[in-house]
Length: 378
Image 1 (tube, rainbow, N blue to C red):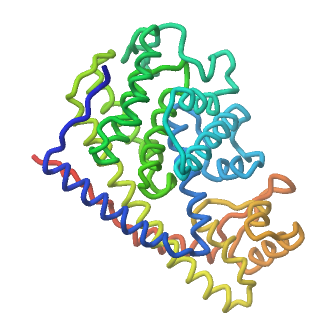
Image 2: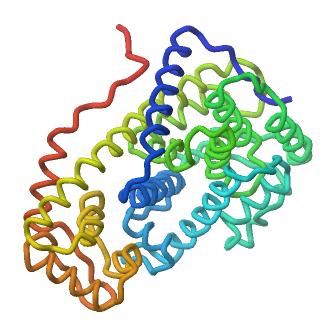
Image 3: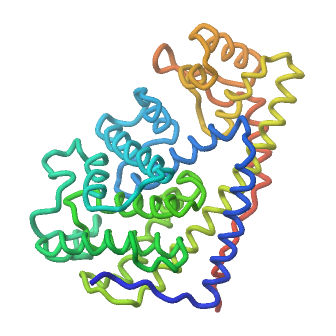
């Protein structure tokens, strides 16, 4: 028996309708190709990877994650963290492909394979196979056991039941609700020795991707869950329903409501970034043209706008340039106060110069607070 899918209250239906409205708006905006779309997708995927891994204690900057995604060595992240990031990126890349596959069906082998992609470098943790014994989730600060998973002998049958549900269960429920329940049930089963949290968040993204809730980059809430106090609220929402041990029931509305709020807040962030991307790109085109810069340099300037730094190799790959062309462009941007170079040789990168800092600060001041779809009442 799995945890049951709850019925929504009118307030939840209203929040869900608003999420759907934002989703339709995103799909409409993404239907027309723009030069900044690819850079924005990469940025969103990097932030999702950062969020999900930071929850597990694997910290890396968005810029380092983008480097790892492109096959380069990160500037700051340790080798061990880089392996975690690379494994998770591999799984998300496969999820992205599965979201578009014409022939698809959930099965236990797929779940085990995704787990192996994520933590296959931890051979001592038997990646991709069900745990051989009990499992306990502890509070990292106190060592207190906060959750005990079901007996290991029950795990295969529970995974079978979850797979059956993924393929045919509660199909009339909204996709966001099904994704939330897939996430909750998998993390509650805790079928592997490691990677259970990341797997559960990735499964939620896959459920939404299969239901065509935009692309995984634009539908994931992993970035939101990895932000500061949101992580504590996430753990709290799980524990409030789990009650410390595996005990399936249907009183899961508080969890689904938490997830709907996350989707709403993250969708607002993505909407803002998408609108901002177009405005910034046009502004940078105008400014670079006025200064006689090549039009291709706008991608370098945009990357520095959304990130804290840019490496020559990334700009070179984005624009299909030779090493010499990319280096000359970046030197010119630095000479004209758009970029500021730091470091030497392989460690060299470019951050915002005075002109770019002015633009970044202007847009930062415009950003207002996000709207909580579940306003607190006294």
